[in-house]
Length: 185
Image (tube, rainbow, N blue to C red; front, side, top):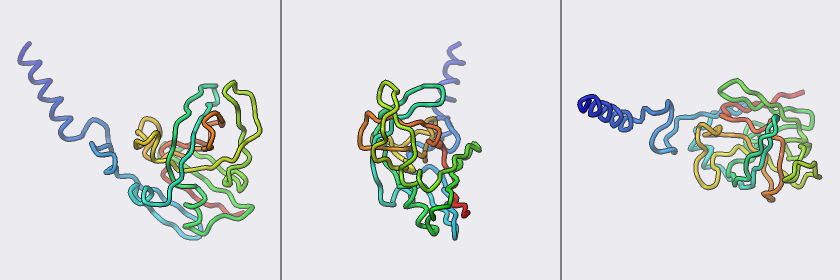
């Protein structure tokens, strides 16, 4: 029994030492190997470090899922979706932005949503309210720490506001974003 316990402890220490507890995650969140492809008139592939080096914005994200689960408010930091799209030619009034994730989830934003308009907003009682100014960001931090993988990190789309009490419908909050693509119409 004592030998078995010792072997298990040795095995656990080895797993922790080599960082093999979760694929793709290292002890230092900054070292996560993750690429974001942004495509439009051209195509650009950015590492997580390059995304984090871009001009950042912050705001409160407070969402409600399609089954009524409310999460947040949390303070998110990231890059405006429009800033990323501008790197590959921007978008016109009739264009769409496809945001996809490594698990296959896809959300399509029209020009109105890219500017933070056209979203349903709710108060803390889930009563619909007129939308305040909103921004769509590709977030890499929540409450001052890197987004964990189990919550959609390292890159997750979030609709943010300056008011922590504003709740948005969370379907556009794409987790594990790995590709953003402009579709011209």
